Image 1 (cartoon, helix red, strand yellow):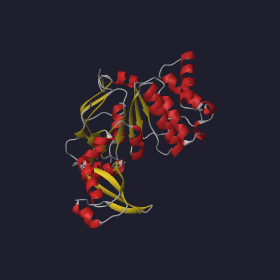
Image 2 (cartoon, rainbow, N blue to C red; image 1 turned 60 degrees about the horizontal axis):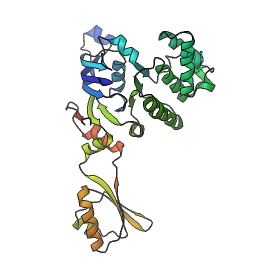
Image 3 (cartoon, rainbow, N blue to C red; image 1 turned 90 degrees about the horizontal axis):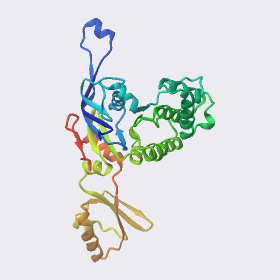
Image 4 (tube, rainbow, N blue to C red; image 1 turned 180 degrees about the vertical axis):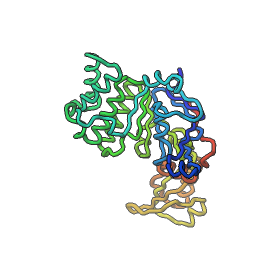
Length: 337
């Protein structure tokens, strides 16, 4: 079975639109929005597209939604060529954006859905059933007859998801769906995506965001995009391995003789006192830990706890974007199992 999304060497360049450039003959500035992007997303996966503002996330989403064309490369969704079979592609995708202008503000949520359902050629009882089913799914039954202009940001995003689901797509393209949504609303949208859309309905979800905690909680794999290039692709454990070959540990001891720790080759990242103990954070290879603990105990140091500490996604992101692979370097990709 073909992957849900397959990209090979996709490029996209935008040129400055400027009257002064046209009148003076000045060479227009060019922006490489996407640089040789290659990516494969299997069906049923929630895949995170992570990057700072202006990194190229929205450009890639628009390209997959057939709203813009690439300058080079090949792409397909559910086996359909993105450009030669764009009509078939549009039948298997649903687009969720943060833009409110695509809805009619003076229509109710229900009326908006009926309007867009007609564009998908849903008619009569079938359309009514579909609209009511989706209003219930996204939790807008009680707000269905309220004008869109009176919806909260979270309710607007729920209606956007309902609209994207009208044709029952196989793939959902979600461009920063929790932007401007309060934490409770964002948690509800994430729960809806994980439990219902991907869990029960088996949808493939491409979730674009710059919210690191959100990506960590939601996505099984991530791609970090920066200046239009994918600089890393894989699960979070793999992302962590790219910035540090050693793990981070926290040792809780009753005493902290600095000279002894130096003799053991431990360079603390931090030392703090808590409840009469010292908490020493350091990096080491996993196989070094048992011997280190034994040596400390043999020197009369009471070891109360020793636990590994995960590297936060924020640290991975910051190091890969600012200090990681060069912008034009080949993407680091974790092979799929």
